[in-house]
Length: 325
Image (cartoon, rainbow, N blue to C red; front, side, top):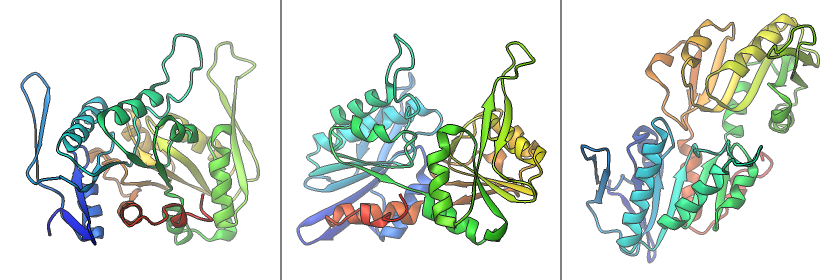
């Protein structure tokens, strides 16, 4: 297979940065193409060098790079790769970012803070990106920060299909780990026909400066609870929410999240949790220490490949998710 696919006079070329090549290879296999051979290396001082081994002139280029650890290095590599495509006369440049870095910094909470998600969009546009494809952005408004098309993909169909095959829906309750994720959990309820519960965090009135206690709003006793979130970073919030569910009589807890960031001390927290299963997508590489029996990873490659194909063929990306978003 080569990195080129043609349709009429159009030419698709698929590229990968070094952040998560396994996912890029899966996407390439789904599309029936190879990844364009690329030379990429670091200089002694940390500067990144990139050169493509095939001409990209006149091609519709799709660059896959997820913003995993070390996040700033891989963002910079992506910007350099975009610049190289632009200067080599690519016809169009679409950046595929399964996990969009800095999306949590989507607004100013206090004075003298940045809006880093907007800065990310500006950097991508300035480098030469024409289009962004991303999965389950932390905040919907991030789509509006980029001056160009943004295709917002959803992992909901993949994850709900997996849960449907694992749990009797008559025993299932969908749980939001906090008030901010209720909208996401509500979509799960619609998809699975299950009731909703919410873990509500509040200050302990009897202890000064205490973090929070967790109250469960909704019936979870003797139910299989599916805690849903868009990402898990250190695992503190989700594991505390799971403990609250067990304390309120839940029969079992399964945790699902699109993006398994899993920064320390997440590995230890997940290992020591009573949660029976953690389900992530492969939007980010799973750390080696998370190779646990109770960690399941489902692949986004078919979803991303279908979206790339629709963009290349001037189809409708939205049609892939009608009824799911």
